[in-house]
Length: 255
Image 1 (tube, helix red, strand yellow):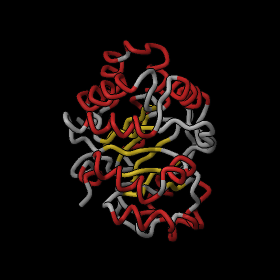
Image 2 (cartoon, rainbow, N blue to C red; image 1 turned 45 degrees about the vertical axis):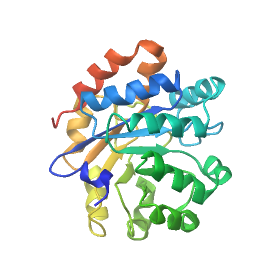
Image 3 (cartoon, rainbow, N blue to C red; image 1 turned 135 degrees about the horizontal axis):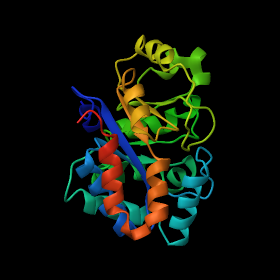
Image 4 (cartoon, helix red, strand yellow; image 1 turned 30 degrees about the horizontal axis):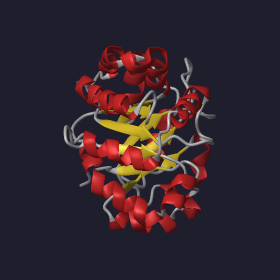
């Protein structure tokens, strides 16, 4: 069983997201450790990219800040290596096809294994094209996490095959960002996914309140919160440690 899947054993998992290098890689390391201390079970690390098509304005702006600050993939690998000296919390990269392609599929996956990354999400690689990278993920024991959206109902059987780590259920149409009203029928789509796999299902895109976390954890195996954490970092910059702890700890209702 992968390190990621273990995070879902006998509990509902809380997954927090932040963008690497915003405001600095030193602070990214600090905030990862603080999220774990606050109760996060898995932490997604966004690799900054110039065209993050799945992201809303909050995370897009964080990508721009990180890139302007000189954040690069090799530096992120170094930061993760430092994080691994202090924690074994599951770490997941959220990136896009271009940085991985240019680094090299085999080299990227090998380096992930070496520094202690447990898996990755690549929103702009369609299911039909993930085969060329999937073999390298398996070679290095990495979870290549599948995204399923509300528009995927007719493709769930195919998408759910060979899933690992967790399924990222994108249950709100559009890009990432905080939403007060989330209208997708979570129960229906979760039940459909469970017909084809026992891989844990984590719900993301839009969640930012304790009430939303409690509601969606009733159906899914975990929740993902990203934009709200990134917004706190935008507001407090290198002094966000305490507010991140208070916010994440307040959302970890299954602790």
